[in-house]
Structures are given as C-alpha cells and as structure tokens.
Image (cartoon, rainbow, N blue to C red; front, side, top):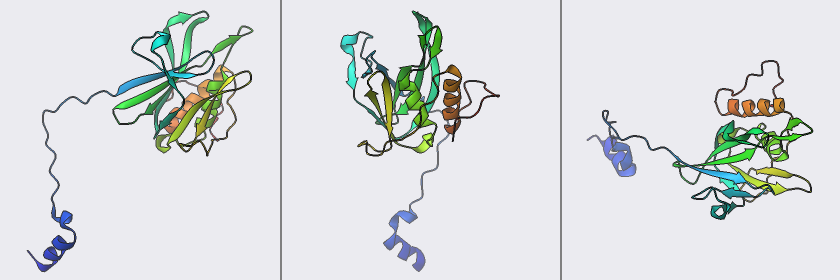
Length: 203
C-alpha cells in the first residue's frame, strides 16, 4: 500500500471499500405496493376504507401528508349510480413507506339542471395541483367545509402555514379533462384525454 493509500485509509476508510457487484439471475418478485383508499362522505369528511365497505368500518381522516404524488386520473366505478356510472378523481400518493400508497378518491361529477358539473372539492384541488411541480413536491391535502360546498385545501408544509393559493378550475367537463392531463404531464405520464384544440390550463 502506498503512502497515499495509507493516508486515505486513515482519514476516509470507507473510500477503500469496494461496493459489491450486482448479482444477475433469478430474483424475488417485486412486491406490489399496498393501496389504501380514502373516500369522502356527502358532508365532505374524508375517511380511510375499512375491512368492509360498511360505514361502521370507516376510519376518519383529517388530512394527508405525502412526499410526492404518483398519479392523477379519472376512473369510473363499475357500479352505476342514480345518473349512471359515476366518475372519480383518483390522486395516488406515496405513504409512510415506499410500500404504501394512498389513493384519494373524490367524486368528480354531479348533475345540475340536466348538465354534468364538477364539484368544488375537485375544482379547488386541481386548481392547486396544476400550478405545482408534482413529481418532487411534498404536500398536505385537507378537506374544507364551506357554507354551501366542500373544498380541498393544499399546503406546502405539514403545519398548514404555506397554503397554495390558486383559482379553481372551471366546472365543466372539458376543464376537468384539461387539468387532469396537465397534472399527468407534470408527472411524466401520458395524457388520459385528447383535447388537441383546448387551451392548456398550466400557467
């Protein structure tokens, strides 16, 4: 060993440690992350799904802290409601560990006067998300009850001292689709909808 190597070993012994070479061949299957779905009551409270869909198994949720968002998408439940299949905005977030994902599912359509509209809870959430760098931004999401509607507050800190202030998206279906695709682009995901002639809502 040279004097230079000896000096290095005495001051930075970890520098002489050779990292193990990767072993290629058979391996264990990568475990799928555990999905924990968060729903919302008609009065705007969030809850974690229990063992069964029954209301008695619901666990109240005051807010969600996440280091990052993985996906934003609109899904349609197989079971049709009063006005047909009901779409939901699903926001998938990283949980306490890499093996846990939280999925916030908010109904994203209701019918008023025969016209399908987007609820304020979804409009306020997407209005904030389209202004952020979603792939690397820790967030706090929190339900908020207004005088006549439910909203979703977004914060940049766990204590709720740095609110994201942004205008809600429009209440029409086109605005919803534009915002969802804008969020997906920020996350490096392909668009879910095709709106070639629509304006991009991202600032």
